[in-house]
Image 1 (cartoon, rainbow, N blue to C red):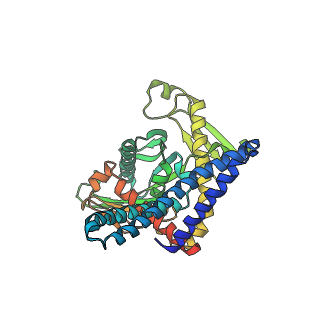
Image 2: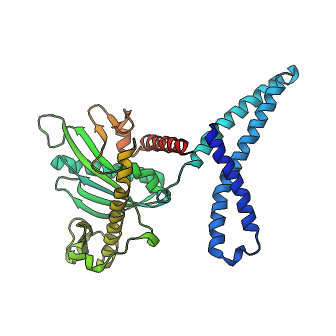
Image 3: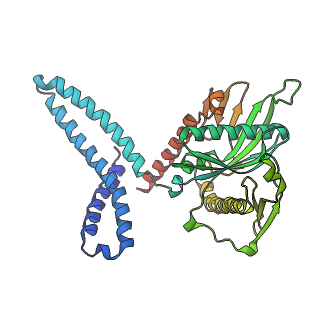
Length: 360
């Protein structure tokens, strides 16, 4: 293990002792907010300190096992212990590195996933529909709940635009690097001469705003329109002006919803999406300067970034940010995204670890 990591882990062990003292003071319960804050920190620090203590214990065990090798009668047992120690130490090293990485509190949140057809006309809309199916299948495999917030179906199938709300454990953290431009190369169903076309769609993944951190919307900045919903939904949808479109006048950002049965429900959903889009805009503005000054292999999350190509004739998926190529496109389009998402997470963790080492 690198020296800078050892120093950081020693600081966690020291901090645990400080927290034990602070939480044992008789007056700590007088300030419940402070007590809760220290308790949460104690849980987080304690988990790291416990694994660090185990690591150091196995280091001592390894040293003893090496000394036992000098005794011929104990050599076999010592060899087994050395192998066990080295295996566990490698696992603990990886675990501790992961635990030390900075945590983004937004990673645990639910997310809005927005897909828009781009260049390519009808084929782009069909591809947007394929992406929607891919993400929905992946969400189902993860045990997440998917809800359609708004949709604009295309004439030949697929979507001009679709917004999904995905609810579950760590949704945003797992999907956050899907934001950007997705390119498809294949023979469209509308192509009569068998030529391969290139089309595109964009994806934006936005964390669901925390109510305590939500942007305060000034009613004077909003224009709220109601209209008759279109598409599937039965007679009720087609007979009432229940669909809602909300326009944020200062930015021009628009959110609409027509999938709920009532105007009130659709307005609430549209405002949720609007909040997420406004916060996403602010987040991207804050990180744009940082993205310009560091390597940022995983990308800025801006929808203008071309992040991935889906080549159907070759059955190939290529993620351009991390030079990952997989020849399992059919499985990926059925929702088997784990290998791609795990590789993106590993790349980001490597970036964060490099930053930790520089700042140590």
